[in-house]
Amino acid sequence: MFSKCLLLKLYKTFVLPHINYCNAVWGTAAPSVLRPLFISQKRALKIALNLHRRTSSTIVFATAKVLSLESLNKLQTNIFMYKYLNEMLPTKFCSKFLCNRDVHKYDTRQSNIYHVPKPRIEIMKQSISYRGPVLWNNLPLKIQQAGTLSCFKSYLKSYLCEKI
Picture 1 (tube, rainbow, N blue to C red):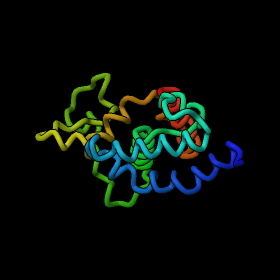
Picture 2 (picture 1 turned 135 degrees about the vertical axis):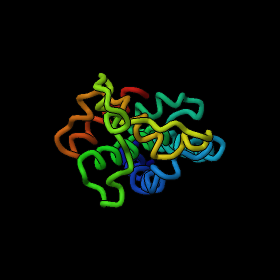
Picture 3 (picture 1 turned 45 degrees about the horizontal axis):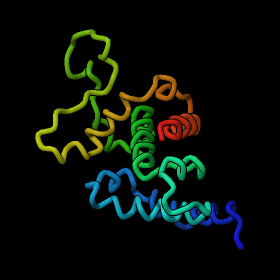
Picture 4 (picture 1 turned 120 degrees about the vertical axis):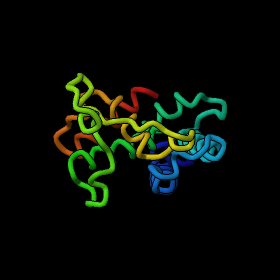
C-alpha cells in the first residue's frame, strides 16, 4: 500500500520533530518517564519499515538510519557544548563551564578538557552542567575539532550511529 520510503518520510516529518523538541532539556528525565516515548518511537519505526514487532532495537535504528531517543539527547547536548566552545551561544552562558586549567594551575594532560563538577545529589548528574562536560570529554578529538557546526553534526551523527 505505502512504500517504506514514504512511511519513513512520514516518521521523520511527524514523529521526529516532537522527539527532537527540547530533547537536551527533557531527554535526561528518569528512565521510567522516557520508556513509553522510546517504545512509541520504536513502534512507529517498525510500522514505517514494515518490520516484525519483535525486531530488535539495534536492527530497527540501523535500518532506518535514525538515532534513538538517548542518542538524540547525546547529539543535542554535544551540539550545545560545541556552540559553547565556539561562542555561538548567548552571553548568558559564557561562564557556564570551566576547563580543568581554570580549576587548578597544574599543567596536566587533562588541563584542556572540561571540568566535571562533583554532584552533591544524584539528580545533578542529569543536568546539562554535568552531562555536557562528561559527554564532550568522551568524544574523539577529530569530532571535537570539527571546523564548522555542520561538519561537527555530521561527524557526531556518524559516530553515534556506529555506537548503536
